[in-house]
Length: 376
Image 1: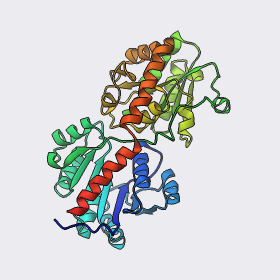
Image 2 (image 1 turned 90 degrees about the vertical axis):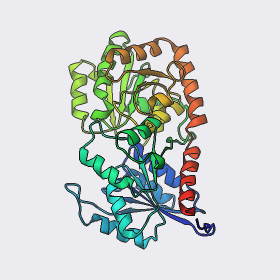
Image 3 (image 1 turned 120 degrees about the vertical axis):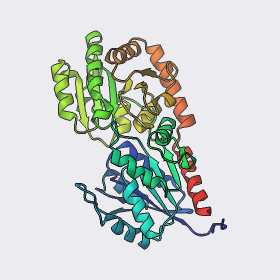
Image 4 (image 1 turned 45 degrees about the horizontal axis):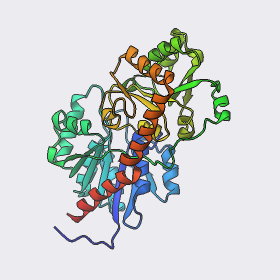
């Protein structure tokens, strides 16, 4: 092992499909922005589009690159285009994120970069066999494989068959100064047409099958049957939007369901909520859940992925079975009918996030990975 040159900045390139609004993208953006600029020279390379977080990273002095791949089919020449960028930047460490593992590994091999890190942020509901083969191929070459939850780490080792000796967990963290309890702004309630007297059940995330907001709306219809002054607020966009809107109409609750779309004021929207729902069928460590907890919103989550590691049932939230619409509804109704219980859980949620899921803790752990690799 060679002694590292502590006077030289470590040059790190992160690869992502995009920096659009999303949990993965937020983690990458927060990690990159939080790294010590005296120790690391960090850039990001997007494969599809730049997106919302690209501009904020630029303001932090981080260069964001776009090397476009062919999204319709395998792009034979893309690894060579990425290799050119890695060479130009004299990259020491390549840090790949979900969706960029295979192409990024090829580019690093062509560029002669052996110090590779891969973070897996979550898996498909149904794993394409070709993806498993590609991930296993990359697992031979990458130095470190990081999962964002302990359950995901186990899955990567047991199912994907990635090397256990290379695989570990770094739990996602959030900025607890940006996300904290705050008032329900009347102007924001008015903008979203939510009556000030209503309790708000909310969620933040992509409107997609894996998030199962269909079950959420069905559960909400049962809640609405018992409690009239209640609104469901869905923040985010995605392929299920039309189906979810139709589901709300079919269940006669469309007047009490607000689709806010993509927003950049998530912290203010979370402050409108009394209960946060996460009805996912699969999950890593949900950034939206952590942000909701830090904002003082009592969570109801499904028993999947990293959720049961974050939420202790009947301590800092409630855990329900995926797809159990009656169970989801009962959990929400109990919280809305018992203010003292809801307050107890939300205060415990705030405390647990500040203690265990800080942004600094996550960044420090990634820094330790980079320092270890660079010293080798």
